[in-house]
Every structure is written in structure tokens, then in C-alpha cells.
Image (cartoon, rainbow, N blue to C red; front, side, top):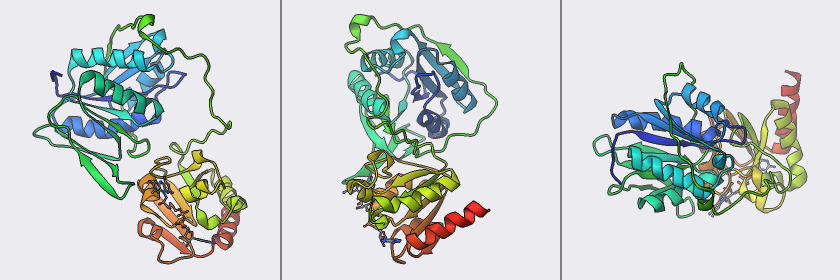
Length: 332
Ligand code: FAD
């Protein structure tokens, strides 16, 4: 695919109400940095129906340009419609690279676009860098069960594509907007859209957990010893206004449901405060929470690896420590 500019693109996934999903706004941070290093602009791509809230948010978070494609066919995510629209945009503007959030839809869309444009894609990245001379992106992601971090490059094809895990980057601060807004009138014939949304079912068990957007998370691991062991975790979470997370060991044991899982095969989170209770700190767990601003670990083993990433550690029994902590915070 011919490169026609030094612009770097970020795909902004939208919600039903036309607002931007958080991961798209987060990707504006590395996008800005990388676009600057290669001397280009940061361009956000917004596709949807009635997406004014997303345009306003993206504009306020520092995009230089916003390309907007609106239409009824984009109201709900559809692989065919979104792929066809992005293919047309890429052929017209020829960006160097494109970042996509590794959400369910992003994980579906990224490979489709890569295949259509005959380029490469690195999935599920957790860090990014760019070579200023060549514009080659260094996409880094966990490999071999999270035991090593692989850096993957795609030097011979453009655009370079990657999906990036939610929660890895911090959203840029809001500023006065100077974004140039470009509207593209792309409509995909109904006959080209092979799937139709009949009904949207929110969550299988009715549980909605916004771990990725949480500011404070209190997580429990195998150390809680059973489903009832999550009671002191939930009590602390309640007084802090926090969301409850868990290690895979606790989820696999059936003590708490999978939407709570933090880590390589769970959610990647980046809260202001992460409290790990009875969690050893396996590399697969750390992969999902190490970008937290402040980590507090409560573990009775002073040699637990979690203390290696913790800012504050309490060596002790969580069943003794948590009630005291909760009570003190409640009194404060
Ligand atoms: P353990 O490692 O058993 O640690 C329990 C800790 O609790 C110990 O440190 C112990 O000292 C402490 N403890 C016990 N009792 C108490 C008490 N009363 N008070 C205080 N502390 C106590 N793991 C994830 O978490 N998320 C993932 O997404 C994930 N993905 C994986 C993907 C792959 C491919 C693989 C191979 C593994 C993955 N794992 C993941 C599993 C991971 O390797 C660990 O097995 C898991 O994180 C361990 O969970 P844990 O820390 O709760 O349990």
C-alpha cells in the first residue's frame, strides 16, 4: 500500500450512544508521541452513527486531525462495513501506521483490515516505540505464555497495524482543541454487509464490571481461600468506591467470575490504586496490572514476588489486615 503521508492513525471505537471507548482515547498518547517522532500528524478515525460526543472527546484529547465516517450502517459494529470504510480511507490517505484497541471488536477488525490491505498486524501489544528514521514501529507483546516479551516489526509493509490492550496507556490530559475535522461520505451497500444484528445481549450473567476504567481496584487471589474469602475484599472495595478484581487462580477455582480477572488472559488495568490481597505476583498477573500508579500488596509470605512491584507492602494475614484497614478507612 502506498504511503501518502507521515500521519499515524488511531481507530476510535464508539459506543451505542456515540461516545468514544476509553481505549481509543488512551491510544492518543502513544499515537501523539510516535506521530511527532516521525514528523507527521496524529489522526483519529471515527466511524459510527451520531458520533458527536466521540469527536468532541477526541478533539479535546489532542488529535491533530479527525476523519469522521457517519451513517446508519455503522450504528452497530459490523466487520464488513467497518473494514470496507477503513480500506477506502487508507487507500485515499496512505498513513504509515494504525493503532486499534484490543477490544472484542478491535480484535476482529484489525486482522480483517490487515488481510484486506495485505499488510501485517501485531495483536495485543503492551508497549510501542518507533524508529524515527525509518518510521518502523516496534510492537511489543507478551509471548510464550507471558514468559517473555516479544518485539515485532513489520518493516516491508505499510500501513503497519497493531491492536493494543486497554489500560496500558494513560489518556492524555484534556486541552484546548485545534483538531481539523474531515468528513468522508462513505456508504457501504446493504448487500455488502453479510451480517445483521438482531439483538444485543449485554452480559451473559447480567454482571457488568468496568475493571479497565476503574480508578481503584481491590483484587483477591488464591490466598482468600474460597468464595466467602472475597467478603473482606468486597467490604474494602465498598468503602473505597473500588472495583473488585481477581487472579486467575481465584477465577479458575470458581470463587469469582471471569469478568473480574486481571492479567494476561484477563483484563489489563491501570488504576490509580491497585490493592493485591493474597496474590503471589505471577508474571501473567503482573502483565495485567503493572501500569497501576500505586500498588499495595497484602501477603503473608515476605518473599512473594508481588512485593517486587508494590509501592507499599503489608506482610500479614489478609483476614486480619483487611477488616482493620476497612474499619479505619470507614472512620476517616
Ligand atoms: P498463588 O500463586 O497460589 O498465590 C497465593 C498467594 O496468597 C501466595 O503468595 C500466598 O503467600 C498468599 N496467601 C495465602 N494465604 C494468605 C493469607 N491468609 N493472607 C495473605 N496472603 C495469603 N494469572 C492471573 O492472575 N491472571 C491471568 O490473566 C493469568 N493468565 C495466565 C495465562 C497463562 C498462559 C498461564 C500459564 C497462567 C496464567 N495465569 C494468570 C496464572 C498465573 O501463572 C498464576 O498461577 C496465578 O496468577 C496465581 O494466582 P494467585 O497469585 O492468586 O495464587
